[in-house]
Image 1: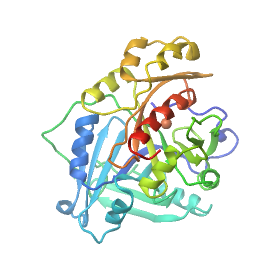
Image 2: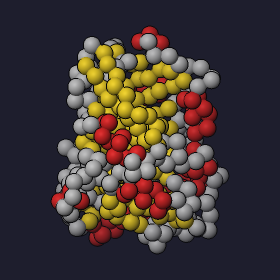
Image 3: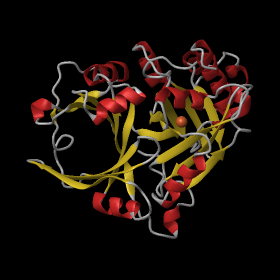
Image 4: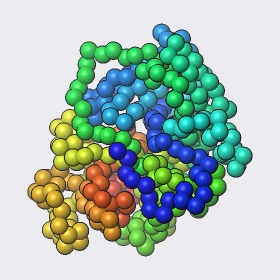
Length: 376
Ligand code: FE2
């Protein structure tokens, strides 16, 4: 149920050297994985999937895999101080370490990308247990973030070797989250085009949309963004860089507090954003709010929609339209104390774009939060 292929797929004329089957999982390095897993289960409705740690023969770390439909998160924490995971948490706070991509052949994915200039994070590694074998490889991307390539066609276990099924007495109901729609990276000043070229050259992605500071600026701050998509459109990585404004931009604030480049937001699809967001708010998830006046004129801009405006307004859900349809979206507040990673919840009704028409209202809402934190 991924969005369909982006039109004019590069695959029509040439073979995709890095065929991706979608996002396999997103792994976060966090200060306390046990509590993080409880939070994502309670607030977002994830289900317990698998656990790895000292009890399962894994040294130095504990990992909890949780799942909802096709959306899998792994929450990993260091158990000792002298540990690369501990260094990552010290430097960045809680954040995304791995954007793991599902492939048919993880060895070929590593060879294709490293021969095109990708910097290896791990050579292809075959991991085995009684449920079969799983091959994993990886390359570095922006900041300390890594793309793993996961080949699981010969693996039937619950998640991957090293993990055991996580049986829990505590199973909050799901909230309708389906899969990763897109995942956005914030990069440093003048670094956007370098990373656009990386995704083009090393991973065979294509730049499908661009926004400059004229599209995305408010009185105070600006950013530039380019959306990179793989051949079949299953994997989309927009990349932001800060632009000059009167005051500090939201991307700069992120770079300061994350202490470098990293994942800004993960956008998660739902089939019913009103039900999903109502449930998330009931469970305590906080979202950015645009002024009520946004809804006075929004239908003039986007035209007729299937939903009633009133629940959208009460929940703070934003609307935008492109040539192919419309979309409904909302952005959470940061998920940790540092103003870094947040989530977007998105329901696409034909639209394949990213909500450009909402940028101004949204960034003004972000800046109000920034100002409260004293970072504007
Ligand atoms: Fe987004």
